[in-house]
Length: 383
Length: 256
Image 1 (tube, helix red, strand yellow):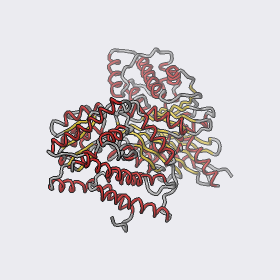
Image 2: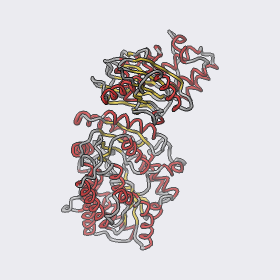
Image 3: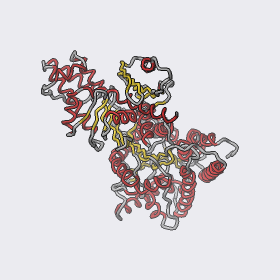
Image 4: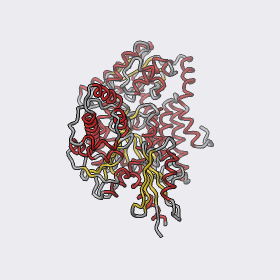
């Protein structure tokens, strides 16, 4: 990475990684390397990596394909599910197009039923998630699903995935998680070193840099550059500090970050799948690989788990560490589990931390941007 | 000499203005034109007429982003909270029903906003909803209270503005008296508002603001559905503008 580049330019280069990745993906295909598409943080990427395949997040965050999806799916469904399906159906997402296998999980009713239709025109493997994180049965189910994923990949590509290779993949993924965490932890600085939108662009974009070793190096260098600049006085002004929690917010849903940062505050922390949910916990490198993977992935604090104590644990830790002044909970339309959890999150933030909380229900359209701005401005005036 | 501030609430239906110097000096209300920016400017001109020094101007409401000439722009949530506090110092919960949205705001003892909810995705239960219905019934919003006093509400089942409109048309065709229909419509607005407001922990004193707060009949129905006493004021419709003017006055005083 050219460190002479201005920081904003580097942040931008991360957000462009997704676009540039299309060509990289094609080149990988030409070289005969398999591509495995995913939607969700639950997918144990190490298994795919150990098979020599490249893992890529599939397009699911734009309203561009929702119209096409609604020909087959109900309108009153989560925009992420509709968008995902729409991209698959229309082949508008190059990553979809190039994927040899798509791995989904039964994180919600809408998704698991959507995968049935997606499977009609794409090769789809669905992992069965337990509904609860506690108990041997849940653990056993998830572990066996990870083994099954390995077997599915072996069969599909006619290869053997050794535990040794999985172990190596675990080490690389752990390194990547640590590098990502060091970067987004820059949000702890007060006054901030960079905007929440820049943090988000880098973290989200890094998922589309397929060479993990390079990506880890770039991230570490970038973190260093920002830190050095900060020490030299490159700081933003002090403003109210917001934590975003809830549903994934890439693409169209980034309008929430914009509404917050356009109206007088900074997003300093993200307790969601895009950022911390995926990266806070590492995989134990000393255990049996399947036990270690099952343990890490099952511990994700997703609202699809009942009960879901890990979400509140992480949220509480982040509110303290990032010195958060207010919490914004983003719920995608018709995401029942996150919508129901808004009450417990609100109770938690007000009783434990006495900080304001606001839940927002959004979809991927632009029609609510005016209202979003008013809500966020009023929320920030409250702080 | 006295400092003056002007608070303007640029709503979707009406634009309200307040001239303030520690007390309310003048108030104005006009229909919001197709050019809300001009409506804001006209009210400002009229209110500041004859003053030697330019008053500090705070604009709030739906059209506030257009007011690039304002000294400060504040959201209607904060302004309604502040305005309600000015009109009733004991207020803890503010219910505002405006032209195109409704909101509920919770205040702490000092009048700071601690929580709010907005219903801005749908016209049902708002001033616009009522306007649509009174148009079909060939009357106007001002006459509602006298028309429906003591009239048993006819049950209206549709919450959605469009469906309620067609329901009312079919009731007219069945020769249901329009007083009963109107009474039913007001009950339906009150019920809808009460459901929405109940999502927040309603604490007394509850204060009712916004364009529909002038209706005594709506207030009575809201009290019934919420099970609490509701206060209002003849200046309730100006709450947003009053809040804006108070914010401006305090800011102006601090700068001096």
